[in-house]
Image (cartoon, rainbow over the protein chains, first blue to last red):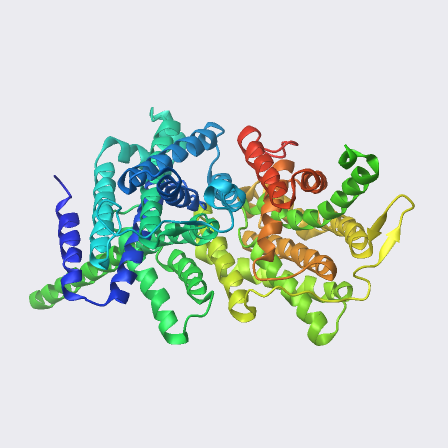
Length: 331
Length: 292
């Protein structure tokens, strides 16, 4: 299919990493980066393509994580089924928030605010409700095996999350090339004009929110399975809301590879800072905030947009140079 | 039904009004900025935390009483807010609302975590001699700092009203809020007006910080709790409406006090959010419908 070749190539290259890198710390870093890339791709579908900036994607991440964990721990559900249920719960939450928010025509600041509020309500509820383990959190029992979705080897987890990221990349590419993608971009650029042309903005945005919720929830499900522990501060914390929007914006908002590139860059920056100064709380986030402001300031298209601009400029100066050489030859 | 007896209920309502007054200050800054720039300032909470730390250290290191420090911190934070909008938020966001939201969020993350980095997550308090003094109103006792805070809010609201209605910059701010392009055409420096507005909003936060610090704690994320409430108030009162923010704040203060009394502290907070989401969904223009 058109446009899928680069995705297959990137995933194939990344899949070879565990054969070269043996260090558990490095693999762990890559697993977490890919998990954030997945959460970011969810944000990107809604924020990047449809232009609806959510400040509370933790709502989806946390719901995925909690549903996976609670179903296994309290109801003895199979881990894989729990994983699927977590993704479905994220999609359902997306449908609910989308229906409510877009029905009342919330846009821009208001939309950011209502998503933030939903994430906060869920965080507070999860910190007091008995079913989530309240303040203690929920611990998934260690029980290695393919059936329980728990693996001794980091490499297997790495391939699992890489596979999920691959699916999310393909989903973004398919959306981009479909009618839905065109509608989303039309709504992003000018909602009123899109409506005048017959695009049903409300249902298009709601659909984007469902897909977005499902993808970000998948990252949350993976978190629960990988760390085997969920509490309200992790699952519904602002850190994931920020990282989910940071990665596509840094990488290239509204592009297929933006979240993946952004996640690798952002996480490397965070790790680099920790190497330099030791693990001081807050330092990585100071860096993230500063990078967010600087990227918007100087390359609003993110790194991918920046590369494209640079290439265009180089091409232009190259043709100019060629023209002047030709001119000199004629003269 | 002892909880609902008037001897408990009445002081709870009164205390709610006092809390609401401080909320009002935070909300005033937020609504002012929204009214002119048409974006929500997500850095508001982090600025409040920063101002509370400033008031804390003014007392601890320099021995300046918070009620004196307010006259230093308000101008200082006004200048800080002005510079922030003029030299960072404005240029960085390229006049795009979505970018502006993200930039304020980025600044919030930087400030909050810089505070965390510098002062750790420890919770600190100051001990002014009057922290636990009360005034006897006959029917109930009220803490002195809270009564002072209540009075100060109305002074600030009056000062803002005077600035908005009786000065050139106030007229310019109102002109830009109503019709930016028109204001620009008649020669108003919009970037300056935006920065002035942002400065005024930040000064409100500094005043709120000085009023809060005598009987409240400070830590790097303390501002967030207030700002989430302030968001609710501003939405309730209508984004951009100053009287709406005042009335909304008092209302929310009372609701919080009563739901805390009936449901316990953490669920009381959920009550506020439920109101918030409900208002956003049902009447996004606020109960007083400030602007469409």
